[in-house]
Image 1 (cartoon, rainbow, N blue to C red):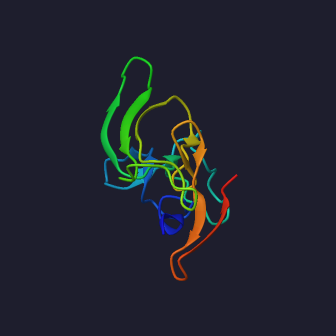
Image 2 (cartoon, rainbow, N blue to C red):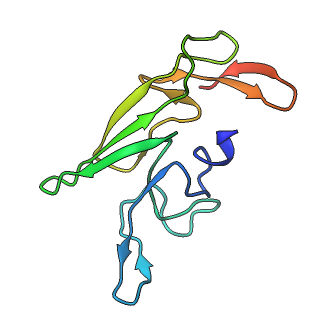
Length: 126
């Protein structure tokens, strides 16, 4: 369940991190990331989150804009009990933000809250 990884604000999986590496190998976190240092149950290194499977990333050195390709699930069709068909996204990250996975994809097409233990589906995520 990706709510424990990409959707978790205290987990670095499925995220774009923004840090400044120091000469001694340690790092500092610049201002402007998604969560200020000291915010409960978050990691201040997170700049952008909500990615399922980012596969290509580049940074425009002139503007600082991050471009990232992200593969969604391989569902060939939408399902009323699970959510939209799989989509591949090309995101333009211009500021800190949440890009949706595992709650939505594409143009905020919502997934359905699914209990993997029981196999039952609930409501669509808001």
